[in-house]
Image (cartoon, rainbow over all chains, first blue to last red; front, side, top):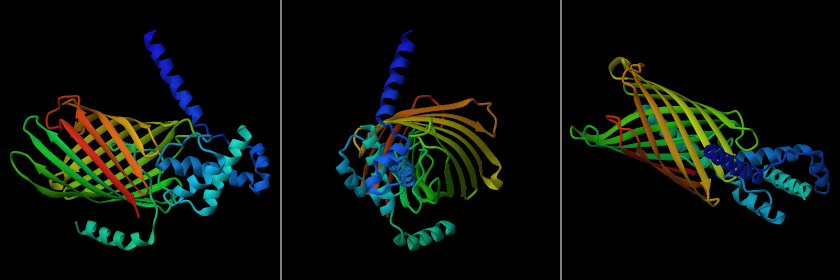
Length: 105
Length: 250
């Protein structure tokens, strides 16, 4: 019984960490929310792919709401050289984060 | 040795034309599932100090200089320019060149968005009277700031005159690393080795090592240190070992 309780607590902690780390799949709703910024579904998908592949080469992903929307361009820009990101790739990541946050709100 | 020197010259010629960072390590005895960004180049320097006392006291310091290159979004290659070591035991002491190697890693899935991040690894290691093949399955899952990592490794080694002496090793390694800030992670590494001299399990050699690690990363460099102590009592194995990997992008 004690072992099951410990296991349950560990699984709950891991799930909580996983939820905090949620990187939502791209939806049509996200693209619609980003329409004013001329961002399409393909760009948002590329932004998500780059976020989950390139950024974790050095560090784990912070929750997307951890920083203000206006802070993300500088954060991504500051690490773009290290992550070998071209300007279009950097913009795609920022667009994805912005769209994911706007639809989550 | 000539090959290692030629590779060194080639690398020194190519490096000024590229400028990227391959990524930071959270572990030193385990590999992680993500591969380097395409076009990135990174030099990693490994130093591993081992001390043993069973049956006689010995010290060994191993050095490795690894050039890691991102080829595609899912594929990376590395060249071990030269593995060399210093050893000191009651019978002798001194430096020696060991081998050079090529390592290939292919990523199959992502540790953040997929149920588990998987990569496969292959290494071919060639030295004077030494040939080694190493295959690895790397499994990783990121839970927010926590990284859980597992490596299953199979090694086949041929040594001595005519490569007549052969040995196999199966190793499983588990690691956990928690990111306490974007620059610093702390964690634990656990190794469980099954050694098969002459590809037989007559001697039932089992080694277990466990210990903490710490990783620091900044700009285009990182340093990761792991200290492991032996939890078994195997003859001719190190009582403890400390590995440091210092990597930087150009």
